[in-house]
Image 1 (cartoon, helix red, strand yellow):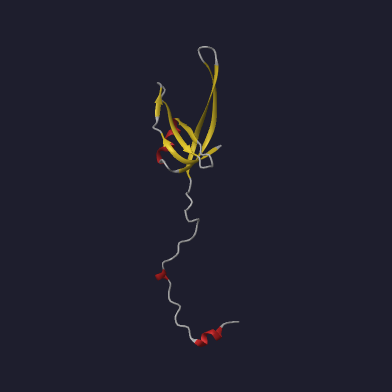
Image 2: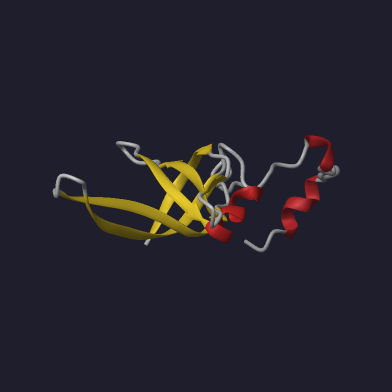
Length: 125
């Protein structure tokens, strides 16, 4: 699965417990009629993938959905979901002009030269 959008937040790497579990959060805002702010977790060595990205950048994030069950001290079962990222890539931004080639400046054109009256007789039609 994947999520595409613009980076809204890149969190700092957090380290937990004696085993050094690392986590870093990324928020991507989708660009659709009703934009969604999707929080994606990167864990362990994947936290370093975010080092070369900046807020405002258009990205595609490959994700896995994770779910787990937990029984609280009162014996109630709770369920939790998380979105884990495992790859991120920058998307090429489309030019605002819609891929129209640039127009050369007027001084780049050479004058056509003088037209003579007899030049019109050389036309093939």
